Image (cartoon, rainbow, N blue to C red):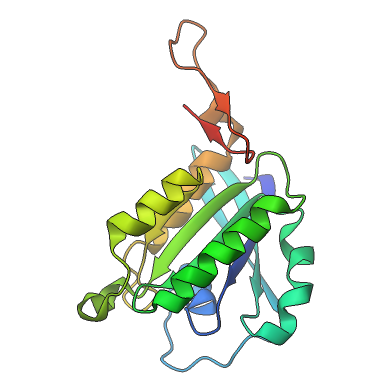
Length: 193
């Protein structure tokens, strides 16, 4: 089977929220307790099959350190998907995810860019600081997608990327002619049914 299409996916978020761990879990199905910080950005790809079509996701895993912040817009400007990660046990990381989200929304991102807010470390719910409903409500108010995952256990990782793949395929936006469902373009370039 040939690759149907390639999509650029940019991963943003604070230092130590688990951006690299999420990608490593998805691509290699591994988790390491101690991962060195990403410097600048790292690149890795994975092919997935959705509706008998192979799509390739090209991940740009960006550094979370403040000193690299000015470089990060060049990684998400032409992305099909922007994933903003926060740690469910850190209110600061969630507040900073909101800052990332507003920054991405103002930038020149592709018209049909999918923005996903992802809470990581769902396996550590006893230390939870961000309520799932609060984060979902925020994402909904911005017309973003919200999900929670655990890079450590793998919980929710495949579902997250399979859902993104389904949204990316043009067939997911095909609506029967007789349908009473209409696509409505929102002000921040997302699509709603």
